Picture 1: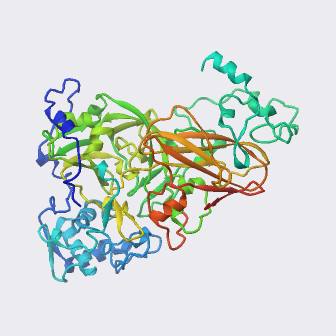
Picture 2: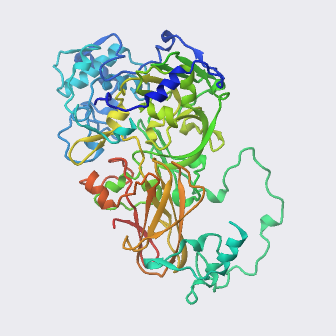
Picture 3: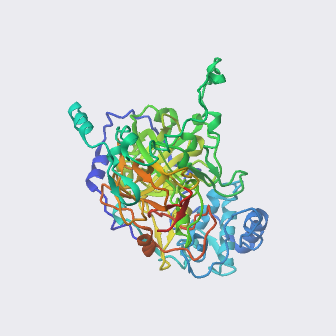
Length: 180
Length: 448
């Protein structure tokens, strides 16, 4: 999706950026060095900006998956664990219904870096932000291989992950472009 | 209203006029003129809003009850509702804390007015409710700014604040109405993921004045301090408009499940974007395409494409009383009451039908009607004991009108199979809801 055409009031932006003297505000924000934000700055853009150093392969990912993911997502990544509603990670045919249950990584997710981002920030459900970056890359590779989106021996890292072509990349419509 | 206005009104005909089919009465009958009902209908067993007045009270003669013959309890430091109100509670989707989302729904059929009490405000959390120490919480504003800054909660409380009333609605609220068959459930299940509160906090634009904005910035990413580190991308336009860092909810600090100690408040925008436990705002050029915006809150359309960044909660209304589970005991005068709201501004008009949409009459709107807030509407109705189909339809000041269900389904589609009753099979459903009243007074959800 292109956001270049999105209209924004350049006048109001100019006013904001020009206000050097904050006479009316208490000015209680403390300056912070980017290095001190690093542990919190986990945002990753769809073009891969923000992906950390490290790498992983599906073979490593399979071992981590069995240990840390399978109890909720199922031994084969297809969900269905009794009493748990964790989404299936593998599979998904053509979308033939408006049901949210149709949505899978393979048939819906538009960008591959989102996989790394979500696993790192939110998984495992009981212990988020505990996986090493290499482990997150390995799990990302494992899920992509199981979904036949990359080759079995491909290495996933900050350079290769944004290049993975997700089948539904162009499947989206913005509802209210004027609001953006 | 002036005294001469009152005089004029008093001299007007006392009988409320029929203004729509199947017993809808002139909404002016409601406006401080309750006396009208006493003799309004002339004949028939009609005398009050709830039933016949002719029958004597069964518990007469009146006597002093035990609580009138002894001093009451001491006052507690934080008051809870009466023990007799124990059923006025949220319903919980995940009370045992399974590793998945948890949802709590507002019992709209059991409350009234336009403000949702804090304990009944709807909640969706994706990783439980964090127990955040406000003294250790921080808000970082960075990215495409001139000066990255970090704010303590104590600092935020010293900023100029604003107060506004606004609704929040989960994008998945009412999604069961995508079902090909009307699901039989009460209002709490069908529409309980919308609530309305008075929020107080610091405008995000106030903090951005302090950080400065790089002209390249077009979006900001908001992120929470909860376990899933929930994150959404928001157009920067909203930050410069009415986005708020909310600290107070209905006058007290935010409830833990609603984002304590601070949350992002984006009036009129999809609930999930109002990031709770807010700890970081990063200005960027392009949206992050996070899990929640590229998968969970993207809506499949009939052609297989999907909406993304729906942003707005569109104009909507539903009748809260009567509604499924609230049985009409006997024919007579009733007040049809409900809620209308729009993410695009003020509600300008609500029409009500008692005959499945064949005729409509304008409901009274409770003042003040606020932008992007619940508006309570009311409509006097004489139920004759026969079948009726009750509907409400809202308009907003931007000219948007709530669609009929058939208009809505023609664009957004319908599920192939009936979903589980509390599921979220799609999102952003805002069409008309229909309640059928049968001759026994029972209320059912129907498509009409």
